[in-house]
Image 1 (cartoon, rainbow, N blue to C red):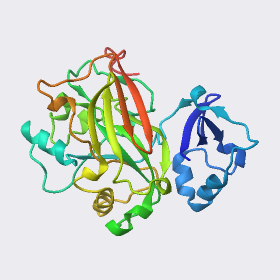
Image 2 (image 1 turned 30 degrees about the vertical axis):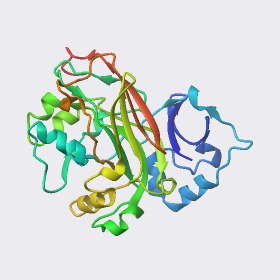
Image 3 (image 1 turned 180 degrees about the vertical axis):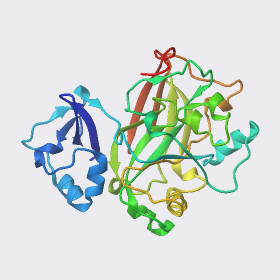
Image 4 (image 1 turned 90 degrees about the vertical axis):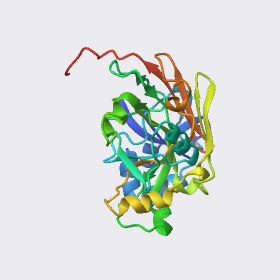
Length: 295
């Protein structure tokens, strides 16, 4: 059963999903973590208590009545890999983007993260807003120099991510970070599906719909660099910590690669879904703060 982050009485809570309702982990006592990062950092003690939790006789809240929060709202790192599906690399090549000879990583600044059903702002300064459905991996424990064979052991869970991209800003610099990091351009969720619930993360169907029209459809088996190779590669460079998010790449069908390009407009609804995990759905909204230079 997934680990759900939600808002209740103005405060964030963690809960366990049982079908159409959620049981607050606070039912297990004040020792239970109240954030996903703390839950992952607590290790086996929190996981064992979570797995033993049953909903019989405990107070619960209907899922439809909850405002779901991003499962990990404040990770230390949010990293994305570029051109990691063969078909997407092929369509990018037609647009003049050469496939990299090694893993190509970039930062999404963590300030871009929003919840699974929150609005995505179309920046007034961008005319090329695009979508990218991705499987997001959340690191479960601190690690460094992890082999591919051992990488599965450091995964805490999985989410759906939409790597929203302002393409006209993305290609202004080689790092592409600015075009990936506008506020609200990091919807994730709908919850954290814990690692043990996914037998093989490389067999999942992955799709993106815009206004009900399917734009992307693939399976995670088509990654060029699989998840375990990604973790090994990154952990060679840096210490990965509980809650760090890795967006593992997007398949073909992005708006930029259409002929002509099909970028997002205000009012468009993006639905990103991955089998065995769930879906997130976000509407594109106007940039109400376009004239404000500071808070």
